[in-house]
Image 1 (cartoon, rainbow, N blue to C red):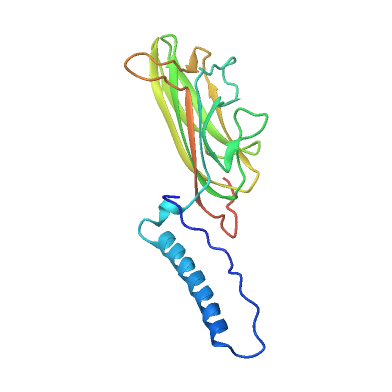
Image 2 (cartoon, rainbow, N blue to C red):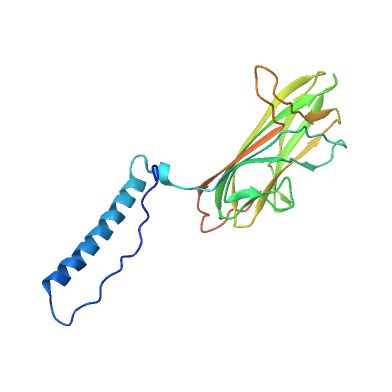
Amino acid sequence: MAGQIQSVEPPALPLGTNEYERPYQDQLNNIHRLFYNRLTNAMNAVLGDAGGQYVDCPNGLFFNTAAQTFALANTAYPIVYNQTYLDNAVAIQSGSTSRIEVTVGGIYNFQYSGQLESTNNSSKDFFLWIRRDGTNIGYSTRAYSISGSGTYRPVSFSFDIDLQAGQYIELMASASDTTLNLGASSAVSPHPGIPSSVMTVNYISPLPTTLPTPP
């Protein structure tokens, strides 16, 4: 298939003869030659300048087509998603709408974007932070402010974090006023729909030998 490296499998070697035979030795050498040629081609493709195109790394992309409201002020709520676009070894945990779980341990980059909407003129604050396996990550909060009725403000948050296989990440949020929400809308000509939240996840590297300690 185009864009893929031919898989390499151990060769089926013939049984040896009791005495030296040139035809057998030629056959054995040809099998070894074919195997090493395939192995060399595969390694050169991966390690070459464009080798990254063949690397299948864990990744995910999740978004929410509905608005997310905050029923109580100054109360923690998870950021939720209702759509999955990519989910290669990264997925929304079964039974959840907010927990992004990985099946391969490693260092991951999370990139979140949201669409804050204010529905009255008062000034209000929005706080966003990281929670891993139910525990808040210290000093991970980001603060945003917005005011004005019918106004919007984009929110972005990018971070790297270590995750072991089976662990999950949630983004948590709180609003100082219930008139603030993460807004969404369907397509209106000439633009497509607006999601309230989008989260992309990409694998960066294996876990270090010694795991870091969160602040």
